[in-house]
Image (cartoon, rainbow, N blue to C red; front, side, top):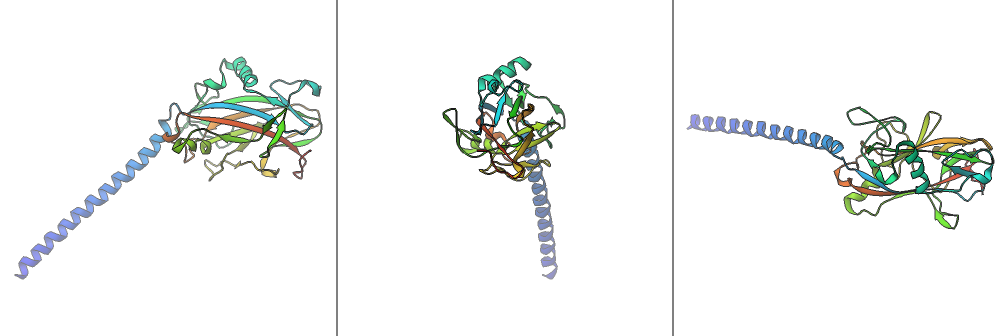
Amino acid sequence: MVLELQNELHKLKKAQARVKRKFTFMLSIIAMLVLITATLAWFTLSNFASVNEINLKISTAPELYLDIENRGTDISAWKKVLTNDMINQYLSSVNGTRIADQRLDPVTTSNGITFQSQSGASRSANETSSYLEFKVWFIATTDMYVHLSGQTVQVEGSDATTSCTTTETGAKADIVRAVRISYEDSGSAAIWEPNKGAAVNGQSTFDVGTTFGADSRLFHLDKLTPKQITVRIWAEGNDPECDNDVQDSELTIQMLFGGADENGNSFE
């Protein structure tokens, strides 16, 4: 009787060991599938997001102006608003494309200037599926730091603010959390992250507010000295929201620029 019980106990232990090995194996398979799925999500976004509309608008402060071209020191030749048509003219002259042609394929960057695929391959701007890049000239009638403003003001008869929005619903609406916009001045760039979350890829980012802090400074302007700034818009592949749920989404991006002194006091 004792021998039979020992045999049964031995069989039970062997069965438990087999179950434990199978369970461990299944957990390993599940973990591998999770990793593979996460990797594939980054790669399979071939038709990611179209930039539906970009409006660049300056604040009502009379000191700050902009244009696609350098208009010199004659302030009357500069603009307060850039439209999509103006940006399209620039893109067409550079490489024959338009905003509506641009597909934001997931890329990543640590500095907002140079971009790579997840595998580390270099990516160039304004390709069929890549990131959007254009240049804007700024000028001011006084020394100032230029910021993005979250205020809503009247510019040439219409409301202007800084926002990144979408008409998408459900999971596709997360596109507004995956996009980034950088502003390069002399080899360094400030990165605006709408709906800012946890930092990825070593990026230092900011989100807009209604006051001008040092972290939201884009660049400095000397009085009546035009400066060219490179603007880049991309889908950050390392952002947790950059997955297949948001492919083929549309974005509306509006940028309101304002000027402030070194203490963050805006010019009224």
